[in-house]
Image (tube, rainbow, N blue to C red; front, top):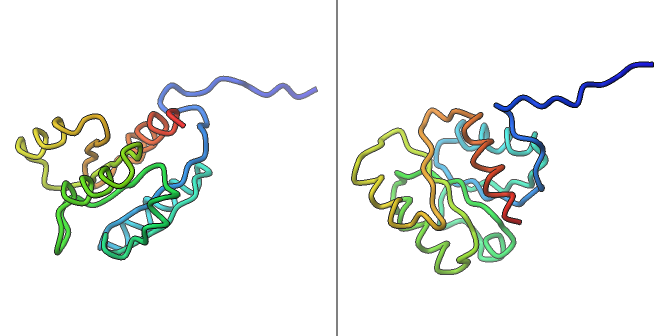
Length: 137
């Protein structure tokens, strides 16, 4: 008889509820990398290059948005605020390589729905964030 271990590493969250995630970033490799990692965890992921391309029905069906902070025509905070105005229960994770104290203050003021994640992404940290946020559903 083969006995399987039930031990789960504390660094890797236990499987969580599958959620629908919208990933927005003009960097194709970042966007597809995040999407692939989230899909590997069983989540449904929709990818968009520009926040203006995200259809309303996609936002209506999503639980989480992962977006770049610095985009061509709109910054991540403005996009997060727009998502929150439409769907207050949706959580937003902004990824950025340009972390500043001012940015932290903006995010802290929106702590009920907004988190920051550094680029290059530490996928373990991203998995923990998604697990934490998915547990709300």
